[in-house]
Amino acid sequence: MTQNEKAAAAKKRNHVIMMIVLVLLFLFFIMPFLLVLINVFKDKADIVTSPLALIGAHGFTLKNFPEAMAKMDFFNVFKNSLIITITSTILTILVSAMTSFVIVRNGKWKMCSAVFALMVASMVIPFQVLMVPLVSVYGGIFGILNSRITLIFMHVGFSVSMATFMFHGAIHTNIPLELEEAALIDGCTRWQTFWKIVFPLLKPTIATVAIIDAMAFWNDYLLPSLVLTNKAIYTIPIATQQFYGTYSTDIGLVMAALVLAMLPILILYLFLQKYIVAGVTSGAVKG
Amino acid sequence: MKRNTLSYKVRQYLMFGGVGTALFCAVVIVPFIYGIYLTFTSWDGVSPHKPFVGLANYAAAFADHDYWLAMGRTVIYSVFAVVLINVLAFAMAYLVTSGVKGQNFFRAGFFIPNLIGGIVLGYVWKFVFNRAFVAIGTALAGGEQVPSLLASPKGAMFCLILASVWQYAGYMMLIYVAGFMSVSDSLKEAAMIDGCTPAQAMRNVTIPLMRSSFVQCIFLSITRCFVVYDVNLSLTKGDPYGQSIMAAMHVYNTAFTYKNYDMGQAEALILFVVCAVIGITQVMVGKKGEVEA
Image (cartoon, rainbow over all chains, first blue to last red; front, side, top):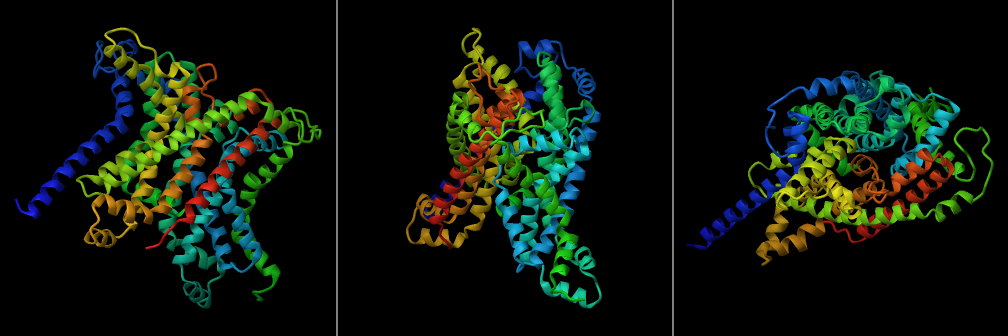
């Protein structure tokens, strides 16, 4: 064997080893999901006696789903999650893009840089520090907890800083001032310039912010659990937690509830996987 | 119209940034400041009176033995979780950028746990530990029923660490992948031509150039692990006997379960300060040695 052939053989062997490691890791990553998936189609008794069997002794069943859906009020909580996530995401994008625009374009004004610095600094504050005052102010003083609008308002307020930071970077580096000046000379107002010229050019950042924030809102538990106490406006994470507390012994129903809770976002991921991975990567690397 | 007057600038600012700034202040800044004020008062959550009590809440928080036990557990949990998350994420990033077949498929697969919230993930793992692992353990022990890992304090801690590593490794992997991609191949080739083995090229060229990825991933994993709550609640709920209560859960319990809002807030602030000091120190130490290609 020549030197090159040897190197090629070694490379091939390395690739085989790496492939095996990857497959094993992949199995570890999807194992919990697979276990839930094989058990969701089983009878309660079968799950208890043989959680590892592909099909239980009593055979394949779908009966866990309708019962869990009814007890969890699935369509209603799904609708709530959807309304809250979509509204909060859209508002976060609009509000943050506008805020970052005025901050970038008035960069020399101390007030703008002060607001921006405050926003960046605030990103290290964990939610635990704000939860008691939030409940105390909005529950105790204003008494406006327990409404979807309050939750949307808080979601947007929490994500403005991070989103503004990301739009700030995008406007600062990618949008030439000349473009806006040209629009102003052609007779656009600042307002028109922003919506007709700047905002459309921010599309990649809009996609990133939308993906990161929508995922965060959809999965958030602690804030919604403090704001929403009325069963009718629960979101999926709260409904899952409540459901588990009530029916934890009925393991078949629990499996169905977990699958229902995971399914929407997994289906979305199937179609938008490329965009989600790209969006999260650019968000993480910039943020 | 004059564009340099203060009133023009203020009007411009309010038109574009007014709503965003107002929301930010209403939800983050005002509660933050109000929260600091609350720690100096005695408040039961109901009465409009909030008598000033000085540092009594901090004294109570420092004397709260359970809080410091929870803090100690959080530190242990965070150390293990942060190290394992980053080692695994780095290894995975190396594997999925090495040119093997289907690397995009693996990247997408490793990321899946991040799509799902901590509450649901915790219940999924609870099922795995309580049912599947017990079934395997029982089969291995020859039919003798083995207890679940979640039944012992050490086991519960192990489960929490495992679930968190599984949850965050895929996300951190994406950051390390971006880091690997930013190191140009020509630098590695130059090192190899100069006689480096692939391992030496990795240690002396790639890793130093990826330092910012490490700093970022470690910062993110520290700040997330330190305030872990969702997984803690759904996976162990603090059991057995409150032996797996992490600091964030203790803060929640103090404030909302036992209605000690003022003391809970003081404990939350202490947690924030500890977390921020560790995070910022880490970033400063990490940034110091950063090199550019």
